[in-house]
Length: 233
Image 1: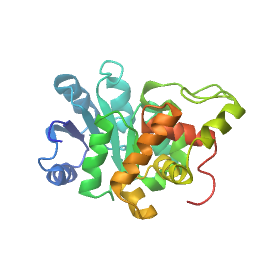
Image 2: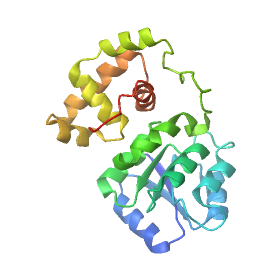
Image 3: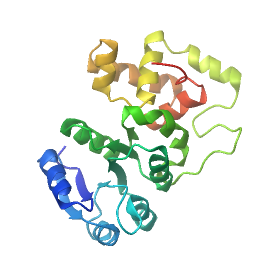
C-alpha cells in the first residue's frame, strides 16, 4: 500500500500533521498544501495518485482545487476529508469531480483503506452520507448526469431487463449489494451481516460478474436505479 502517493491539502497545519502521522508509512505522503493556490501548484509538480483535501479553505476550498487541476490531471483522484457532513458540501465536491467524501471522525485504518480504494478508481463515502450522495454519483469524476428518465451507463433502462437482472442475485447477494451501495466498507458489511470479509468480497465479485459491471461505483448506481436503498437497512 505504500506505493499510493498522497498529497494532503488542509489549511490547518496541526491537522495535516495529524493526518500524516495517522497514515504513517502505509502510503507515501509526497507533500502538503495549506490552501488552493499551493495545492494547485503541488498537484501539477508532484502528480500524486490521491489528493486528500479539505472542503472549506480560503480561496474556494476543495471544489476550487479540483476545478483548477482535474482537467489537466486526469490521473489524479480526489478524496474529500472534512468535518462537514452537510449535503450541499458533499454534493458540491462530488459534482466538481471528487471520487469520495469521508468525515474527519474516520479512523486511521478506514482512512488508509479509503485512500487505497480511491487510488484504485473506486468511489468511497462515509456510510452516513450515502443516502444523499448516491444521487450525485453520476456527476462524479468528470461525468455528466444522465438525462431525466434515462438510465446511467451500465444500467438498463428496460424495466423487464432490470427485473431479470435482479432475479439473478441471491438474497444474500442483494443484502451485500445494498450495504456496499450505501458506502460501507467490506469489513463493515461483514460485521453487520455476521459473515467474513472474504465472503463479502466473494459476493461482490459474484454480483459484478452477474450484472456485467466493473466496479463499486457502477454497482451503487445500479442499486439506486432500482430503488434498492429505500427503507431501513
